[in-house]
Image (cartoon, rainbow, N blue to C red; front, side, top):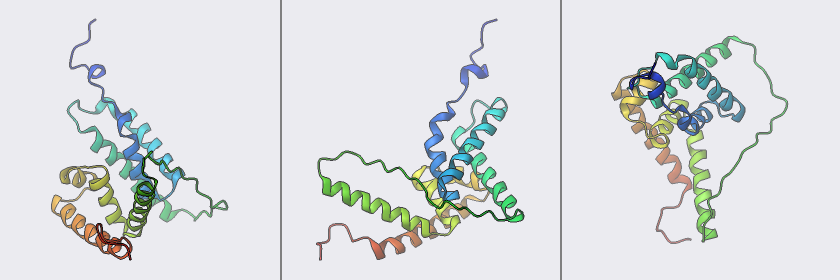
Length: 183
């Protein structure tokens, strides 16, 4: 029997294209490489199981981010009622990818600024960290963010404005103004 053009197998979305964004979001939520990996893996397991129920015109990226966030929220709820686990090995392994550049100083400054911005984002409250990541790093629309966070678009907009203001305050204190002469 020939396949129809609207058959799910023909229109199956490529969910693997969102893995980097999901991992970044999971890392912001968990602040732990291992937990972020587990969260992304669980997201893909649940998404694959539910994929047959997904409409072909669905926003796959938003759907995946919603799954990830819901898994994380469920994990937090369970964590509150479970006994606290203490990690003996406190080492975290991180991988830094440095783009090749003809100007080593520019590369150094860029990496330094990136690290300072990441640190400033880590200092934000979790609601602000989450919304900054979804909007600025994942480039999701206000409507997509509202759906993921299960809140009105107006709340997304005001929370994002407050998050940007707080981030600006944090960064102003540590980053030099572009174009100013060094002291």
